[in-house]
Image (cartoon, rainbow, N blue to C red; front, side, top):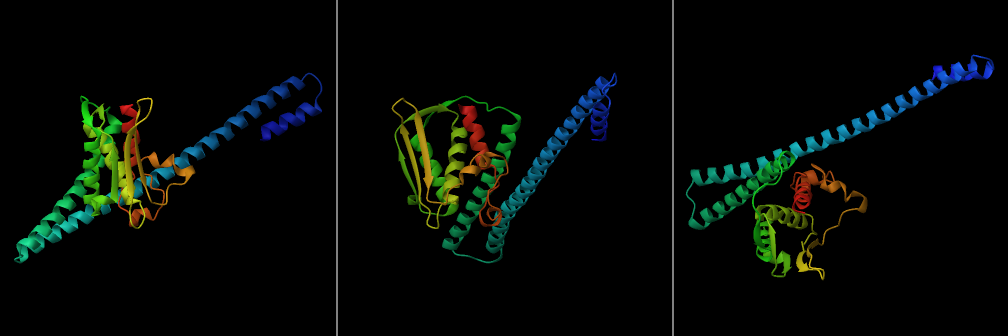
Length: 256
């Protein structure tokens, strides 16, 4: 700034042979000042992004830790109960059911974390199959309803008998995450609709809707980023890691 001011005053005061020198110094000083300001702005922008990413990663670690500890504690309690006292057949069946649900929850969490890491490091591989979409969606609905212990009727499925050429495991990952989010963030009495149909031009459309509050328009791009959860209250009130929709978007893009 001092250089620029000195050059301005010198150029205005000297109208002789040194005037071009002052204007040259003014141009160079102005250029360096602009570069410094641009560098500061870029640095601050990158710093803010890094701080936000670190915060999201910290929240992700907290969520994963909670998601791991809860089913492990439940499994431990069930095993200790079965080991310490005699229980009837009906009670045993109930304990085994709880343990299976906890294991399914752990399996879902670990699969999500591993899938997110795999998508970042390697392309999707494997041969495509002919997948009956109606059957696949019905399996996904049954799995999610069992996970959240809600009646199967909570999710209304209306699917035409169509076949898609793709990797079945990728389609399962996509629709399990979408239906999981729909049931998780639905209203107090969850109501979810899954519709599968053909467009007049031959395209296939799957629409999943729920009776929840919805997502603000300005936040709809953010929800597909890694570790993003829109409301801090979700970290304690709703299970999740912020990876589901990121996996969905990545797989859908790769499937074309």
